[in-house]
Length: 171
Image 1 (cartoon, rainbow, N blue to C red):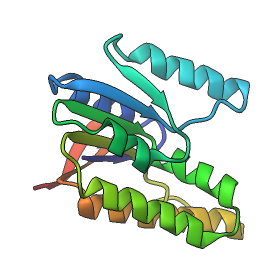
Image 2 (image 1 turned 60 degrees about the horizontal axis):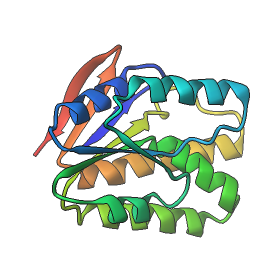
Image 3 (image 1 turned 90 degrees about the vertical axis):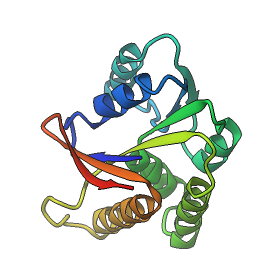
Image 4 (image 1 turned 90 degrees about the horizontal axis):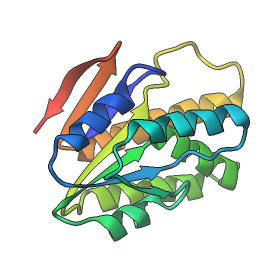
């Protein structure tokens, strides 16, 4: 399942609720890096929202491998979030678009071979104004393409707007 939405739309809360109701073992795959105080506080707030039964794994770059390693029929993995992961790829690979594309392709291939369940959270960044610089435009375009590729693989796609989930795809 892919859960899309804008900033503070309720997408992470919705994804957590889906996982909590699944009855499966729950793994939270965190892609965020605590590089400043505001981000540290944001991460702490997200951690406090999760029940103690959650196993948390921090993986800012190699999420396909982390999913492959944790994937079991009795497990649901929540990846939060793809756009932070993409940002991490941009920071690591800079202008090497081939490496970024390769990481996205590896993830999409892994998602097509899932035994358990995976819920991926991603920001919808393409609905706003056109960014004023080439790097931001490249990031926005890559995020849009990433969301399209994951959505094509996903059985379900939900957009969350103002806390209200809207089913876009339900196979």
